[in-house]
Length: 222
Image (cartoon, rainbow, N blue to C red; front, side):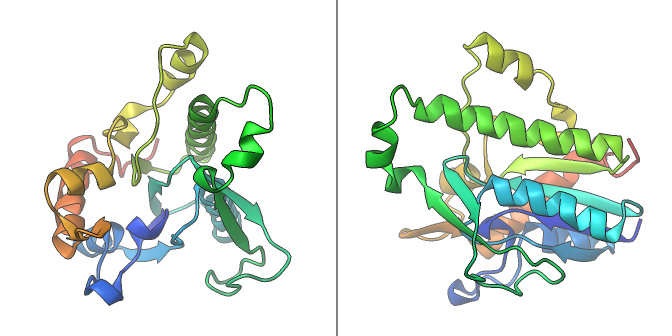
């Protein structure tokens, strides 16, 4: 294995303005001696992560790659643009994306009868995770996932519990927690006004994630 592919939001990118010149998958790729292919994009959600991950593999093939996915917030809703917004940030991909957040569209949401914000977001999270899980297993691509940002998990509803139990949790690190919650609890954020990971916040999380990968032998084919 010679390549590591990763996708996510800003938690899987550098933050030079805060002096953060590394991130979790950058650190892990160096420790494994793998070439990193990272198409994470700040401010975006899981629609983009799911679609562009599959697109990248269809463009580049399935062999010799280990995958790390850091899921964004399910309260973010990505949409394809016709204005070329930030085109070229990901090479060989023509589609461009913007994102709207639930908190920005409450008036519209409340105009639609019965819209359950939290449970709809959880349904989307389950659907995204199981979609990529199925894609990886179908194509025998070894992977691990984690939540970069917190998820609303509600398994009191039978439908959700059934689908949650279908997630391969050996390949999902701390599914009921997130990188954001970890760095907030351990004071590993860049500043009190910016809850992105500090350099140490990335290094510590990378160490814990790598230990999970190694203990469970997740780089082997599935």
